[in-house]
Length: 341
Image 1: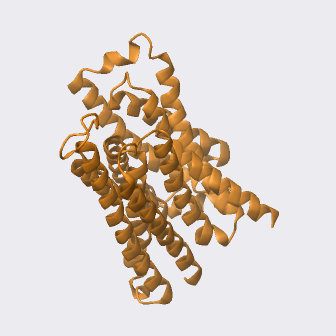
Image 2: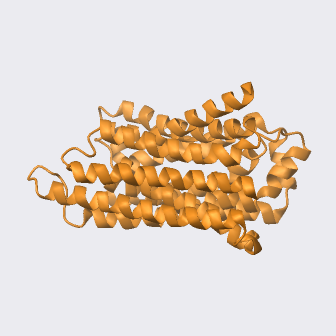
Image 3: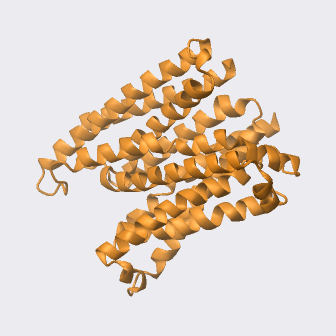
């Protein structure tokens, strides 16, 4: 009972960290997007995963060199796909705000992350009780996403009507498309863990605990995604001639804020992993949906506190709240379906 409670608290803490990781970007107005995202990428996606894996997986490099090549290839390739989703995530949140961006992207990620493994690995179970629940969850997600998009459109319409609104016609539509594309590609990190499971299994044979074995898969998968992010950022630095922003006077604290972003992202994933392991059988059923719901709610709280919905009007806010409730119901539906499998 005590371990389950500790696991629950760790999952919630992980969700709060994940839902907060883009918050420092609001306090870095002197840097362009690529400056901020590159520091976050190096600290959170290149360095942190190897520190975590090295500290929790015995004989890490022996694990990676001895694991099935097919598992290592799957983890790397899907990690690169997730890296594209990560870039789109950052661009989408920058355009539509953390509140709406997290809701749209994580809603899509939950649906595809639950549906794709079912269709690929267990197509015969699509019409089973668990399969029907997953399909119902997907439909619920689509409804929630539609309502979120409607709330965002109402917000854009209200801000366009105000001279000081600070938005341009079509900005919401482009941000919406980017967020949906991110929602399609971001679940590839789940595929890295699913199809790269041989790495974690070999890590356990060499002494890693069940709760830490996936860290051996995280390291190459996240690194592959980090390389994609870093290359894109470097291209933007050259294109926009913004590399000099790193050394401009008055931006020293920006480096720290970028590192904090990376620490929050990786810390959130590590906290969730430990918490889900402590929850035992409740991990997939309650841990994952609670984690996703906490991320969405946290991002929306920060969005409200930082004025993302200021001037959006009461109808937009009401529809956004309704969409959050529906998306939360959907992710818990996915979690409950795992108990029937």
